[in-house]
Image (cartoon, rainbow, N blue to C red; front, side):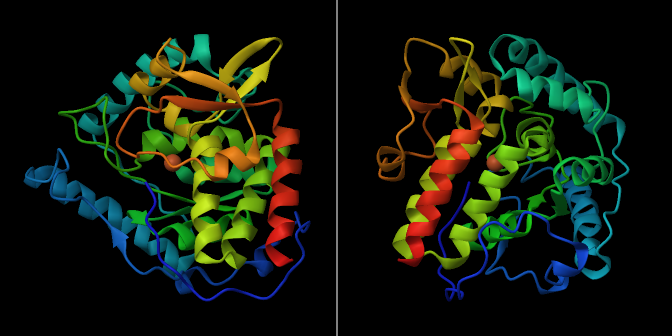
Length: 301
Ligand SMILES: [Fe+2]
């Protein structure tokens, strides 16, 4: 999901600046990316001309954002809406059983439903009101430091296209299902939003080795995190919440669910392409935020 590229480190800055105003944001046209990966050759839609044309159109919507700073709504077609409905309905059923109650409420509050693809513009408006988090469209996969650094401005880069209709249960790259059903609802949680911002701060000042460790923290929390809830365990990670296979697997006997320990997590080398045999359970989002704050503070010493 993330690739490694080094960029120069930055000077120290305030870790607790949670109020990011529009004027504090860097110019979006200056988004620094080594490259943006789109539609690899092994993608299910790589040889589908019609799909490629749709991806080009949606990429053009996303790119406009960097010139104007305004999110362009995508005019999704009937086939794309069908893919969404199928995946969203299947996930909804599983999530009722396994997802964190906070997440389920947040999804509802953001108006994310099974019947149509939500627009980033609407979710962005609501998020900004709730936790000051923002969404910025991007047309593909971005390298780790570039991607994570934007979290320090409480900005999440989000794709707008949807996966290929031949494999609705699978996508080798993030898509609007992964963003809207996986990631976006959790940013309405103040502690989770602040924790995400700490990860962003970390990415801006991390050495290459620290960045690798930060990538693992992101993986086992933002993507594959589990949380305690009233004596039970629930999912809050986007990689789990946006995949039926991953979500069911996370709660099966094949997975060891361990209590979260920062030192263990940042040193846990994982295989991206396999289902995860070990997952980590945080006691609460507030605790995750505090542990991460201390960890990022240690980057400067
Ligand atoms: Fe993700």
